[in-house]
Image (tube, rainbow, N blue to C red):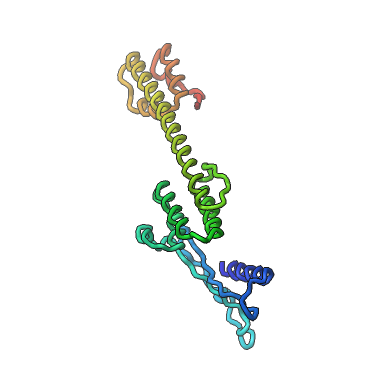
Length: 240
């Protein structure tokens, strides 16, 4: 990372020179390199390029590169402590760890207010927040490209509502499917008890963990089987 930061700063300066955006007397503006880290493991990388280069003797030591970046480790901060801060870095950390969809929308509103008069920074934050939301949703949430924070909020409000409805429907369908399987398993147990008497505990457990296809297969065999073992006779059972 120290090498990358040195490269990024060099490229930035090259671009400023090319666009003639340097300071008077051809001076370059100071740059504060910041690395915002949100990983789970402790950051162990060197923060200064000089620490990656062995000490050199004599004149060479004078010309070795030196550049340090500021590391902000998000895991060292409590989201509750960051909430009252009117601070862009604190907001960035909170965006990485939103408490809910509602809190995310509220934070976008606050950020939009803080950045009044700075449309370019609004655009940059909108692009970054969109990428962050896509990452957290594992790209299951479809989001069009946006140009500013207001547009992002409207898009997210629509997509979150649609996504929540879809998940609710999926949950209902899964619940119905589970209910059907449970009902068929109970029906199979009642049929087996009626034909062969009390079921051994291992057979009850086997039925409880079976798929719907297996239960249907056993149910069909239970109608004509001469014994309980005949019902569960080894056979390549359907898996669906």
